[in-house]
Length: 350
Ligand SMILES: Cc1cc2nc3c(=O)[nH]c(=O)nc-3n(C[C@H](O)[C@H](O)[C@H](O)COP(=O)(O)OP(=O)(O)OC[C@H]3O[C@@H](n4cnc5c(N)ncnc54)[C@H](O)[C@@H]3O)c2cc1C
Image 1 (tube, rainbow, N blue to C red):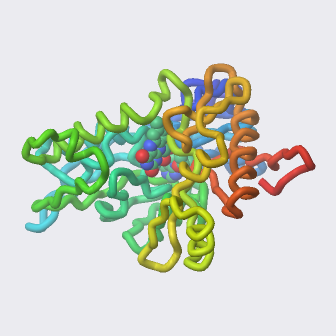
Image 2 (image 1 turned 45 degrees about the horizontal axis):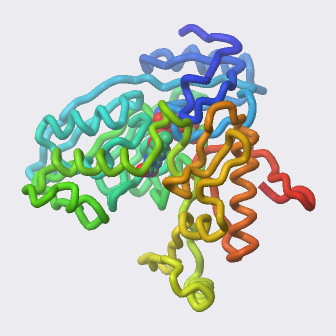
């Protein structure tokens, strides 16, 4: 497996940032991991970043270690137990192409997750979700390698500790496990999830089907989100914050129109987009770094923004929300490295 030095990542991150990796290689076969493990033993001081499609990352500087791009390809219908069909995909498969392939096989379940950029292997990392469905709803198991030792392990649903845009792989043992393949459990008797605003309208009275819902979701997403090929972005940059029921009561009293959704386990999820919009940041830009005019959660690179400038903008937005509402926003993408937030009065914790 060839290891390149000083490799450009410009085409490999959806913000389109002109950053470089000190070392870079692509993993196309599992066997190749042995050479990476050996290489790592010779360079124990260097960090390693697992890379899929680069659509949930913000590089604020060049990467000082090895970027390992996972390109393992595989698609297989494993069989059925009479209630579900089990389908496995390699981590390097393009997510949307895989979703469409399952639909073309006559299998439903992934249609609401259409057009999310990135790879199959990154999907469990933040338990991707959209239009009322999360990856955990269709997940069966995954195979992951501890890339430090090349040991292979199976993770079932409970092992993955999926949460809202979160998992074991994102917050408990980040960067340790290389997800090699994911197996999905797709229902033979699907129940259409069309509660989300806009899906029914897109169908215009047509009988729902998995392919039609996928087309509807695709059209809705295209109308709302900027295409990273045209305008660099990483989708929603901020997670919707969770607050305690008592904080929610106080906020609701002061701002009766604030949208919030009580969660089954207690906290209330707030709309980060609403909070940002109220602070006047929707559509504003600082040089080439901006908050997208069509969607307050999306930060965009109008061309020549650096990752550090985008991160500084994110810090400014987070500070504005904190000061006005007392609510802490968290970034959704991995920020590398996560620089301290600069503020007029000094440095804020990042
Ligand atoms: C326009 C746009 C819209 C988006 N919409 C949504 C949305 O609706 N819902 C949503 O949830 N997300 C959304 N995203 C975010 C993003 O598409 C997802 O998080 C996606 O799963 C990232 O995939 P990736 O392959 O690009 O991951 P990368 O950005 O390459 O990596 C993301 C993280 O996963 C890790 N990783 C990558 N591959 C592996 C692997 N094989 N094993 C272990 N770790 C790995 C990386 O180290 C990193 O920590 C959107 C992004 C964009 C640009």
